Length: 250
Ligand SMILES: [Mn+2]
Image (cartoon, rainbow, N blue to C red; front, side, top):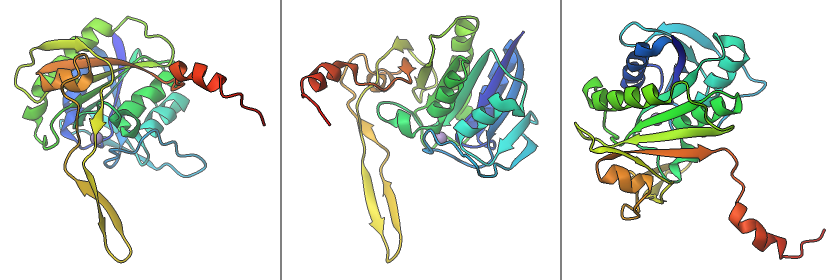
């Protein structure tokens, strides 16, 4: 019997987390700890020296859950510090409403919750569905089947330190298969709205380079699930030799 912690960034009332929690119950005990309200694009935010209110609540299907007034990473941080039974065999995050590919990953609360788990030494997987208007459980049925199949394979495996798996699922009734991918290139279509005292970042959902074979964007555009291993070490290793030649002195 495995023990799996489930979180997300769309909030405890989102349909994706309910479908993911249901899929994970096949493997053993499930504990849900998730933001009380939508925290999409909150990044790897950590709430320090400030109150983090919480309450005991339920998912749409009655599954007990803890709702945290903080970021997705806060949910995992307080979990690891004693808010719930710890450590689990696996942390899963999602199923997010919308893909998290390319440069999305540093904005994504779905991904950063998984990264927070890796900081605490627990294997973690982020699941996202490439469908922004998904708001009904049926939209997530295939994604939940995919999550079940991947977790079935990965439970019991070890991930290297500070490494997670980022899974993106195309918006189709039946995926063609799965591709091991690298991070692709997003192109954002953001626009600025302005009134006398307020800015808003609006615009169409992001696009990106769909033609670069082997990337997350390419796989999902072609009907495949993408699985990208991510590492928290953001050092630009290939660039270090150049900087070493800059003869820096202070
Ligand atoms: Mn989200």
